[in-house]
Image (tube, rainbow, N blue to C red):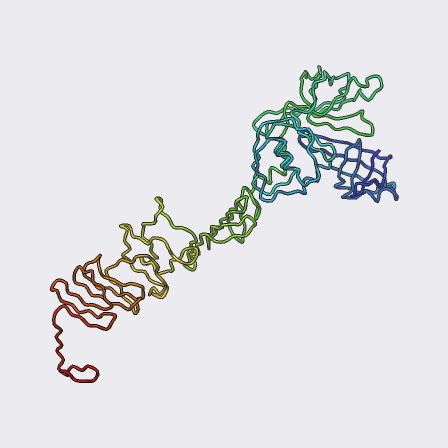
Length: 486
């Protein structure tokens, strides 16, 4: 019998009169259950997509049903189901599934949060699964099986991974015994000649006199013998189809190979670049052109005829431009550190006309690095956007042959070299010292000519002192406190 369960897994109907029932299972492939019933007012209402069909203890999703009225007026409902491993299609790993570990660890990670549990896992050792695109959990589980060379077995919401399903029981499919029909299929389309046999077999195990003697299962190795066709081979059952209602006339596919776990639709999806579809991090579309994105959303590049962007991501889908070219509008933006191969930029920084006249800005808004020409000294012109540099230059030492400007501010402005000649202006006391030689004398204001032992000092106590006589030559006279003295 077939039990229909609702979305909450509660039984709502039991079907006893059904026909054309067939369970079909492939190694690492499809696992389906199809059946038909006549329309029934009480029970047929529960045959709907989203409900479940339970048979032989196994649970199947109802994924498709079709109703047909016959000439006699009766209505048949043909139902298609997939084992509940089908639900894994709806868990998607955005950005892909890239992990290394034991088969048990990776299977556990793939099933996390899906409602499925890990059953028996026989393969051991470390494997790597590298799927960079958005991928569903069922495809990940199949890829784990492919990486280990193992074979999957589903029972309800439990997923097992075995080294090999089935065994050799000494069973024979033999003409005149239990072999009812046979088709030999030879396929060389892949470049390798592959041979398989589709066999209609009488399941003798269902007869009382053979019970327990002629049983076989998916994955078993059997002997197939047809003397008239000259067939005598030992191969595996890689697909098994039977009626759960009356398991007597069944069909098996026997071959010495197992096709890949990825069906043709999956192969097309992973080998063809469609418009605005991702393939290994690359998407081609009419809006952005070529887009290349890392699986972890840490970097992305966009390239088309109008612009080129290299972007830095935060891992959550948000990006900022690190390098941006807009040749149509002559805009080129760079956000980061500009280095030559040795770590220091020593080339020519130029605009198209040969002179760099844009804004030189570091990521934080202030340029604090070394601006150097190839010889280690900057000898060009530093200009702002309007032709004159109006920003701020900050450094511990500025060395140059000439400084021009309206105002120069600082704690100390000095042209002295050590204790030699020069001019010193100390803003703290508005001091001005003019030296022509070595001296240890310090005054509020002084003009000293040490070479000729002459000078004048203005001390903080108001005294004026001179190294020699003070001579004042003033054609208009000399006044002290408004009194003319000369």
